[in-house]
Image (cartoon, rainbow, N blue to C red; front, side):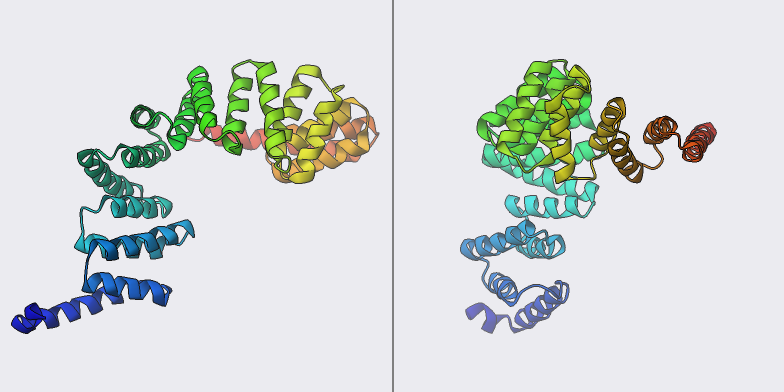
Length: 336
């Protein structure tokens, strides 16, 4: 009150400025959050800052990025070095595709975390910075940041999982497999980590380990299609159309998610080999719906129609295949 009575002009200026800040806030902020903002603006104690920051992260969790960003802006207007709010703002910017701005904010946060020797939070920040680098097609920078995060906190799930994905993308399958295995030591039931481990093992040529990993994924997530898809495709690839487990796995995959092109095209080919033409048609026609510009399902349909004596349908598929190839040749010959 002494400050207010002494500096009347400043007091009214603060009221005007506060009104300006509220005018910049999104209209759909809840009354509770607006009250929390007002309380922080009036008295920016550590307790009020923590309460407002918590509200910002709650909005982040709900995917309300514009609203969360507004909350973090309120904090940073008074506490520009609040690293957690800088981190939260960076997440908002990343999710609204403002990558350059997101990188600037997370760099500020990481510098503060480094000064504070808050290595756990620094690892979080490095993971976010690495994801931004990866989205900007700088995979080498992403890998270096993630290696640093893992060095700081070896048991950090997101750092190890993201490192595995980055290494997978760069073709370093051996180290990707190692990173996924470390991540799974922290979260053994994680669906994505199990799937990427299985896929990495498959691409690295370790068929037995890959099959075991896909079967493990099915045990963990029996209602998720990816485990059945990976297992089914790999079994058909290695054992052929006679693999009953492979066929059953693919049928379960499309029962869960009929929009899996690889499962539909593989089932179409299997039934074609088995001369089960009606079943082949169902899956190949679905594959065409999913990827109409891919010549492969049209070629398989051509084979089916020829075998069942539907000449006009076969000729139609042949024309489609020619049109697709001509279109691709035309697009590839255009100057870049």
